[in-house]
Image: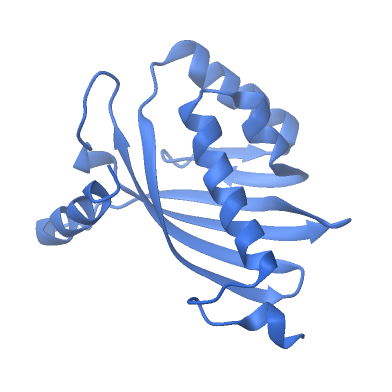
Length: 158
């Protein structure tokens, strides 16, 4: 393991920046409703766990499922904040983030759909790709103060 790969969050390595960019691109492509561009960020044999718990396997199924979502629904806009990126090896990283969604035609977040996101990325043939993305509802059952706290934190990004 090279020291450059494992730098502090205050001075990310080049690879860490690439993983951060991968996440940001995924949200940007969602917000532009571009299923093919989302899918292109994923490895061919990747896995995605959707907000509702649905399981989507592989780049082709991700493109198809996202395309169907965009065709059938007016989707909300994601606002995301990266909490941490941690290298497991020089070629494998975990990114943790939180995100909120602004419903179509509105200007504020809907706290009911805040989410905690985990992305596992791997560098294959010199290119970072998403291997696993999990989108978990941030319900904080019985702790409405945590829902409010996360919503306020995400509102700072609007």
